[in-house]
Length: 223
Image (cartoon, rainbow, N blue to C red):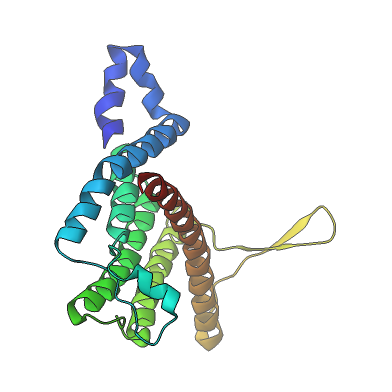
């Protein structure tokens, strides 16, 4: 969003020309995420404690785990806010990859929110039923798969569905999944969609793990 607001100003002040570089916007988004964590973190923790939204520990669990009872939960809201807001502020929103990553992250966040919400409302350590939780994650993954499949059908293709198999030598052989007809063609298309979804899900999972680690460091500094 800020890219479209600030970059046109480079005709008046050349310093705004830096906003078109992804390295600058990456650094700016990181600082924005850190600022949001530092500002919203303590406030959110206080609100969660005021509303008595805390972790529920099973009685048959280890004695050492009972000390965690009442610890504010739903910290994923802070992580999602610190990840999504800077992305929407500094990313190039004309890129379909940005929206795929943002919507996938929000989708997985909704699954986690429902799990925590049910634990709080039921006052139990049982949240979403595992099969429902898995179903939600599969739906999000399939959505990512269909999205990248549509991108691969653009002209020119915006996403490659080729499988790269590394060899012992310095060269690599690329195996391209070709279109065909009949049941065999449908199987290949399903395989291509699954591989595409798996690749995108792996990238999103790596990003979420990095954001979770940063949020944990921030929260550790706050406490």
